[in-house]
Image (tube, each protein chain N blue to C red):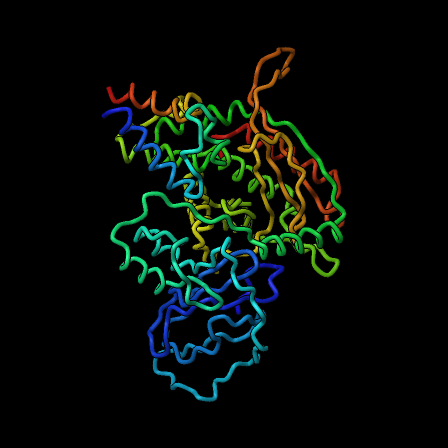
Length: 375
Length: 81
């Protein structure tokens, strides 16, 4: 059972997409695991042949339990290759209510492709899970796709529990300090407008991409904020993996990481963000994409919020919040004008840094956004 | 293309973006971003969807004119004339 997040203790195997004897290669999806926050497609990291599937669909197993044995080509199938960690008895999983659909990501994708309304599909997987066979059966039975698809309202109780656990731990353990500053985005938005005029609609950039890149670069200036606090020690991280909070339409949020955000250009960042949002919202995040971020960005500007006072996701030591871009009177060099301005906030872990370093980070962030052509 | 056809095309795209929403219950003059909980990423996808469906590329500078269903239909009708 892979660890798919700092707070993950266990996961439930939803389904296998391979069987013993199947050949697999690095990157193949071999099954789906449900964590409290999302269903994650599990990838295999080596080429080989599936020898044994040790976990059964529906089993809830602790992180570290062996789910399957994959042997390399030429390696003999070993009957003795029992799991190093014996999984405990399956934990009880609540039966889904009528108001909540349990659907594997594979089934959800096939349903979308075949135009099957999941609300009308009877799940036959573990604990009523809708699996791909259910969708395929429903597709055969359907003469045509439903005219209107209305998903049943879902409340991801497990996700709320996971968020609650992480946030309660954060508030309990992390002495937060907060700083905020208003940043003039006139240059950045003019740059963006000019860039987007050169691009086809499919390649346009969103303003948040500039903010992400500026945060990534500012973390080079103040590396103590790109770090974990573990065992009463600050562990600086070389790579800048920016967790990007993505709200899900069914409620809750996930925070997959944009890996090496500091080394990506704006187009690559836009592509990475598009990919993550699309996958997150269609339940297609892969295990390799749920990498622990080194810092988190929360952007609530689309919802009209002007200032974000976020809660740090442990073991990270900082969270950067952005609000709505608004036009306000702005005085500079004795002149008064109207400027598009965003309020940037920093939530910092006072065990790791103090307000002085936090202020230097916000200053650096502002400076990078005043030179958008260098982002 | 008739106004009804344009409205149908817009509804089809919005259903993809917000499949759980009941578009019949949204007033044509209601702010779509608020009514459908559409963020800037979703809105860009609506613009891309309109481009693919109707072959119209909407410049970014016109986004602010497109707040409601009626705004969209009116704008697209004019562009398709």
